[in-house]
Image: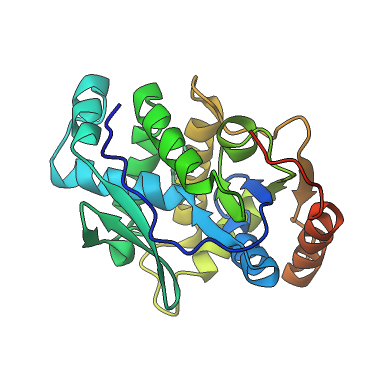
Length: 241
Ligand code: DC
């Protein structure tokens, strides 16, 4: 697809390891990825934010969300870049910093819907492989260990019961949430369903991923388990892919 994939403005750290973190919404991927990135000096790449940025563009262009060829043409005119910012990465959509707009519920829903299209996935996967090709990254998403970097040295699949994930998401909405916990859980289940059942690269654990079910784990326990996995394998030499 488009050559206008954009390039990363992210600094490239020392270690060449690739850590893949996959799992459904609300499983704690972002928190764990951020922690591992800090602890081991890795670059943190949130692939969901890239799908969200494209979804925002599709919404702004009032694209029909069921027409693959129109969405593909829009992707051809789209550049998504990640830049290291003070408090995490900034996402640039055609040069505009859209980081603050990506958590909107409509964008969330639309990201899940546009991500079922193989052409959109192929474009995103290529960009993600470019961003991670030098290694030294922790990349989180749905298909990192299965499709984007099947040779990643560390693969973690995070999961938790839907009620627990929904409650965690609800708690993140702040003191005056504009949704009820039941609504958050319902939307999350719908998104899970779509992510797990799409034909192209559905959400699933890679055969060699370590499954961490965090339903009954504290954040501290999850962080420790993830850290131990990376520590164990960080010296494994071969460059992935
Ligand atoms: O991780 P997230 O909630 O920010 O992801 C938003 C949507 O993007 C999610 O519903 C599915 C899609 N996605 C995907 O299909 N593949 C990825 N690697 C990351 C996200």
